[in-house]
Length: 191
Image (cartoon, rainbow, N blue to C red; front, side):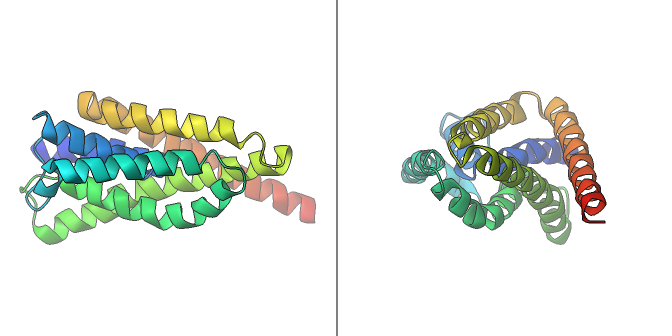
């Protein structure tokens, strides 16, 4: 049961990484420092005050950069692989020692990295639509939604991990269907 709960927390945190890379890591560090959460073996560094301060600074920089038109689009090229890595690491950090190391890494990569990647790609698509329709001037709305989503998911991943996992799965299904519909629509226009 502990393994499933850890994976559920990992899904929520990974989805949050898809919105903002550093927010969930900062939330994990704060939760660890406050004694609300104990990271998996090897991730004790999350409890260091210096790490928490560095993550706080990185979070502020990331948030600010997404409010600069055109920089936000450039940042997405860096954030996409970073989100997959962060999603994998957050899932590893909440995994229990009940699985073998190979199974833990495989689950973290598939569940954590995959979830973060899908969410990140949906934000890239949303920002692309916003940039195309508003010339980048409406991207602050997308950036604000992503920030709120990341904060809420980071907190709720610890408070209601199973509910968040179900919501993330629904979100992933909706995004995949939306992308497929857009591709079919584009193929229909090109014929």
